[in-house]
Amino acid sequence: MLRIAICDDQPRELEVINEYITEYLDTHILEAEIKEFSHPDKLLTAIETESFHFYILDIVMPMVSGLELGKEIRRFDREAQIIYATTEPQFALQAYAASPINYLIKPIEKQQLFDTLTLAISKTDLAEDQTFAVKTAESLRVMKLSDIICCEYRSHAVIFSLANGEEVSSRTFRENFSEYCASILKDRHFLQCHTSFIINMRRVERFAKDNFTLYGGKIVPIAAKQYPVARDAYMDYLMAKEVCR
Image (cartoon, rainbow, N blue to C red; front, side, top):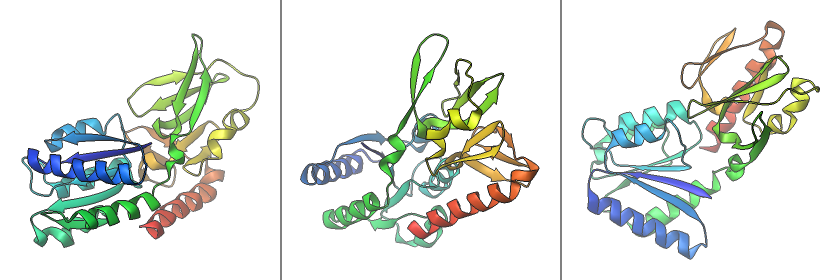
């Protein structure tokens, strides 16, 4: 299911964009969760624990501009589609620092928004809604792959670090780490950079020769022998995302 965030400090603009999106979804028989944010700070708080496929952002807003907001979203998510909707055409060039899919001028033309949504959907990988089931000491826990920041092998168990700051520990197991996480590693967003670590490349903030810094400041080591493979895999991932934009 698509997840869409709309951020605009004008209530009427939020209402109009929501109505257009709802009409588009009904026409194309698509399901989506739409969340409205009347202040950029509220959206910044939300993206600390949840992600969206599309962000529709105003430019001129109090405290945090849509330009700054778009850059911050990119820190957390390189793949989400950002659409700017504003009355100010002069910021178009600056807006492209956040790699938006389109820059719409208000009043928004319905068909132009519909065409943009169609393009955004064509570039969206809904496979991120795949899940992974973990047997913990207390129960069976089902997690979305997109919520996993990294997996760490420790004392014959795996510690899953999640985007909301939670850590989930599996029961101990006999197979090796790679075998246990085989279904996760099939997802193109994940990379094993060390015998004891698997990262979600969507959550990388910084890449160095000996480590990845992930969202939230977590530092994951890169094994020396694994560096060329990790470097090439991460560069290929980044290039593939740029090609899709």
